[in-house]
Length: 247
Image (cartoon, rainbow, N blue to C red; front, side):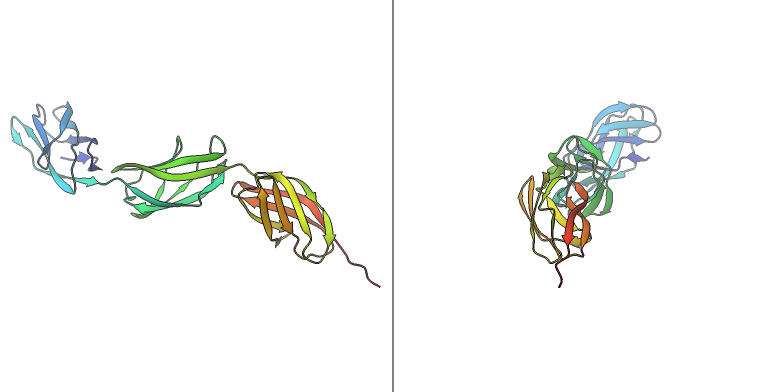
């Protein structure tokens, strides 16, 4: 006599179907000492709404012919989420985040706002999930659904990709230290600025302005790339290293 699903929330409310033989006319279904609500019944199945409970309990079906052998039903507590990393990413989605907590073994869905993604369970304390595309830039709540229920409490922020509009000045000596201002959009979550392949020290002034100290470089043009949580923007040949005089 199979039972499906064989686990559900400690708060009850799980729809459970029990299949077997001679089940017609079922008068009661017990989860341990508690009685479940019967919603459908045929000769081969009984569908019920599980009552609240804890731990593992025996499930039995009683008909005019007697009481069945017991099957096990496992009560699962609601999940608890402690952290999410990274906490933001591109509005287009596609990056992988890790969520840590407890009670995650039976996770079947992670919602980013109204959009559902299917997670990969690593263990009871961790899962990973590919972030779906967001409707717009900004924060959304993150919820996890398990056999024990749904829990909210984390936030993920969608970030539009940056753009580079102007670089002032756009040239300087090959030695390091020229203060360069980069103007554009969506710079708040900037993680790195590179001149060619060389990282440059930077400060975020505001969402549209970066202050950068040029690293040393060889004479010639180099690309400048700004990388944020929302992606990267590159301006080809955006800065020119100028050779110093020689006599």
